[in-house]
Amino acid sequence: MKNTAELTTPENLSEEDVELYRRQGFLHIPRVLTDEEVAECLADAREQLGLSKKELWDSSVDEGVPEGATVMEWIADAETRSAALRRLALHPRITGIAERLAGRPLRMFRSEILRKPAKKSAVTPPHIDEPYWPWHGGTTLSAWVALVDVPVERGCMTFVPGSHLTPEPAPEDWEIFEKYPEFAWLPRVTVPLLAGGCTFHNERVVHMAGANETDTDRLSLATVYIDAETRFEPSAGFAEEDLGFKPGDLIEGERYPRVGSAL
Image (cartoon, rainbow, N blue to C red):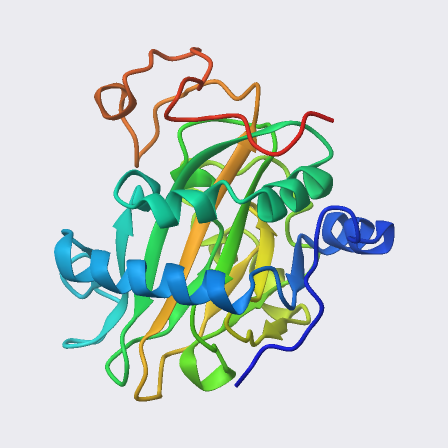
């Protein structure tokens, strides 16, 4: 379906939307890419999925996933493999919105091509992202850009509004319903997206996604943006040798550029 929504830019993003993001921990932007930008990025993402090694979230790494099903496949650091995807990760329309939502200067940390395969995917369980990342505190948010239409039946994302307003989580808190079982009873918002639309979400907000029940792969690019003053702390996902930083080092350099315009 053609996305006819008005393009959202840093300039026309309303203060009401900024406040809504900060209050609920996520924001739906109906259209952030033009049709031409979507087509270029989708073609590049499909090419990379055919060329690059993919990480798998399936029963081999998570006993909760049904045998033969896949929660997701992804290619990490997509912006280092493709000029088009790097342009998307650093797109001034997206990064400018991210900085307005965060209210401070940001860096791009990494982007990932995400594929939830057609017909044989499993649900993405409720979780938060922050315990995985190699830092503590600061401001972190992700832009999740749909490269194909993502209706509910294709596994769009669902968020628990306000669930980001919690103390800093510990590494074991990735499955956040175990620490805060009351969150399971809070209202949830499901956000279907047309290609070229996106969501921004805080790394502490509880989110999840349904299975892909359609004949079309769900394809998206997710990019993580961090506070420009973020300092490295090893985590379950990242050790010192992975990034080349020592604990306490500022995460900076060409690999982690400042984005958008300074506030």
